[in-house]
Length: 317
Image (tube, rainbow, N blue to C red):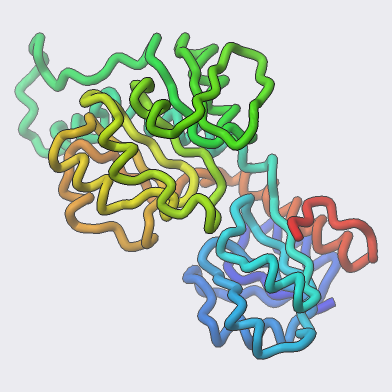
């Protein structure tokens, strides 16, 4: 089976794929273009693709049944793939759930602590050479322990964030989710997103990206948040109306934001970059070698099962 890896992958991932398949590794770190995707669909039996490689109905309409019949997504989020169009063209799609949960939750904690305690702003102050020493009112932030955490989307990652906050920081947990969730600590389900936003000191987005969650968080949510409220997104950028977030920060309607993802990633608006109250990371959610190796191993296993005619373990369509 001929398999294309759409980006340079961890060496262990490439080696595992090469043991099983005839492999070609695309050397660019940038997303595949529509032309490259069309060529891949015509030339390869399967592709391991990832964030930014947008497989759309428009691209697929050029094919009846393309040669490529398997897309193994390297990552848990797959909103860049039109899975219904893939099903219509006989293409199986898989992802890598589980492997990313703890790493992404850890980044949420990083952003919560950095945004609440003004860590990025403080680090810039020290590097500038302008720090004049400690004093009682220096860079007063928001104490994290004992706060109220609101989680938008209480799936695997949302639950991992809630668990860290409850057991590690004695936080009260509230959440907004399509269904009630059973967890091993107290957690209150809110019926509306604005009610959750008004209640929480810290609001974290952990919902999957989809057409249904596009701009789920906008001006109404930010207006409901308390003035000291901290907003964190570790899910998908387009879940948030970025212009509304920028306006809320500029007008000091909310206290701070911590972002690992952006609406038009990798483009980050100058207005957002200019805000000291925004902590901005370059999509580091799963950026640890062992985590990426685990993701690769899961993607390769999905490919192996497909090639063997077995049930694909993490099929999404």
